[in-house]
Image (cartoon, rainbow, N blue to C red):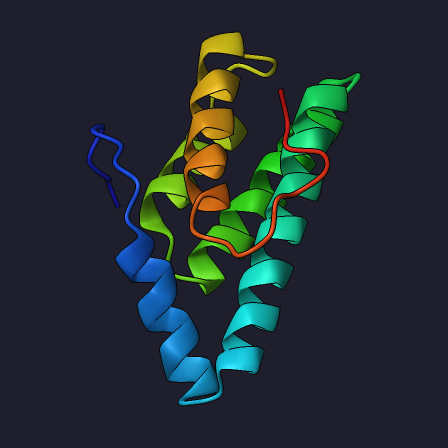
Length: 116
């Protein structure tokens, strides 16, 4: 399966997935949104801190799976490219950082350790 190479932040995809899972419970939506962002941050941090190809690939595949489970196709595509491409691709890592940073604006909290 091939994905578009144009990346755009789509808060609607995440919001639709969360609404389908949580229904009319705003506290559950907030909890799930927070869990997604925190988990994604951990995997992006793992990409930044990877010291070998295997660590890079594991973090990329975990990020891809997380993004897929929440319907965040653009982030999933970037993570897929990281997992299949050349490890430690700085330009791709910057795009992943930017994609994740786009989600931080859709939260009611300010994460302490957004990847740099």
